[in-house]
Image 1 (cartoon, rainbow, N blue to C red):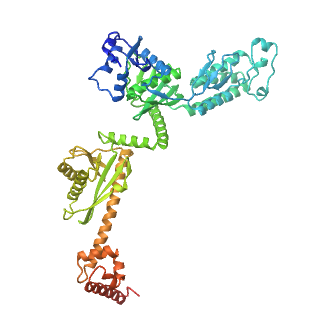
Image 2 (tube, rainbow, N blue to C red):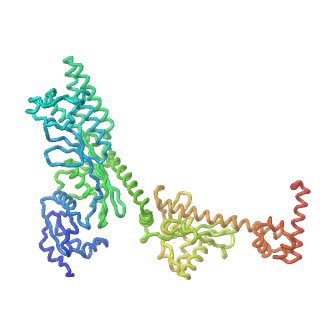
Image 3 (cartoon, rainbow, N blue to C red):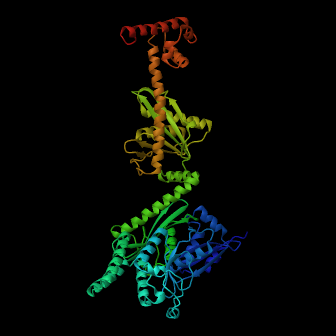
Length: 611
């Protein structure tokens, strides 16, 4: 395959804003991008000094042709890029994972317009409002309209000629008060159309304006002593005010803004949109974007903003975002990053929505694909703990002793985020005398990884030491002696404040208490403690029993250990016959043991301890 001469292609690309398209050897469009300077942006893909990820390198290797479209401003490029991506869906562009057909409220283009919902858009001059991501919200609005404004629901051709000829008769809806009977000219077209204009204002969030007009008409009706009309107007105003009170979430001075927030994962991003009119949220939706080239949050948010504004036909001049958007010559659009106040509350509300949606989606993925959760968790740990590889194999050390006696060390192993109990190990301390926790840790770590290296069973990516700086320093001594201190990540965790220590760092690191990384570390620490304590108790109990046997004349530590190993407990030794005892000890020792426990029973009876 011929190598692409990008230098020749760049000569024909101007320093102007526009949209560029990459094509492969089969003349398939594989990527679309926007730029405020086409030549500089396209050239950056081929700049060897530019840091690009592996996926982008694959894209660049497939480019065989570059085309471009010049536009006047960067905003025009932004909008054109979005429409072209939606039309062509190139392989390497961000994919909008939104296969739903959302419903719209339609105001039909006809005499005496009907209002209803639909999922199909027909270009016949009708007005469509939406789409509505929440079907329940849409039905609530339609219910409000039906209760407040009597409109026709029939599909009769209500032309002036047909009405004057008396072709129609009123139906049950008229009898029930749900329609004013325009089919028999009981309601004028002007009155009907005034209702439609009010409904448009309600659907566009201008409920306050409608209510004010209704209250003005109400006062006029009362002044004219038209109490029946006044009652209807009052009822209508109350319904609208009640709906508005449930919908208003911010100060009504926020008249027309779009609000966006984003939450990212390794392969996906989620963007929430809120449309606010006169302090009321009139539209809300969250979409999912699948990353293709490790796009930044700013790039993803820019794509989503363009998509939402196109989808909802929004022309708001102010857009509230969580961080600055680098979009020069924004065509009169103001990007706001609020720090406090009502706009910050709106951004926080959007952020809550996107985080909830993200959690819900991730939970769904992980139920269907448990390996997805494992990869995400390990990636999160790698990032949180500043590692350069996934911690698929983690080992955690803990020491136990009782006033310096019976010291033991325990190691637990997690593989792919789960306990691997067959790999758990414990150590009887051999080289340490007295209560020296640091030296005990140093011995355990050295013995563990000396054997690992000898048997070539593979080092872990992460080692966790239960303890603070002292225990961590002791473990590091052993790793340095073995020459593997740079091959693994090692941290210490102190119990009191859950502080994480790194070798050589003066100050600890703190993770969020809700962090999944911290929860895994705590689980490892607690499991190591449980495993170590269990072994320590067994050893301590065995040591206490062996000491009691050593009180018998002629029985030393070695013989006591042999007896316990054979009979399993002092109770069984006490109950054993001399013949049974001689399987382990000689005749003289067997007689001494039998006599000792016989005397013990006699003493307990004499003291009233036994019946």
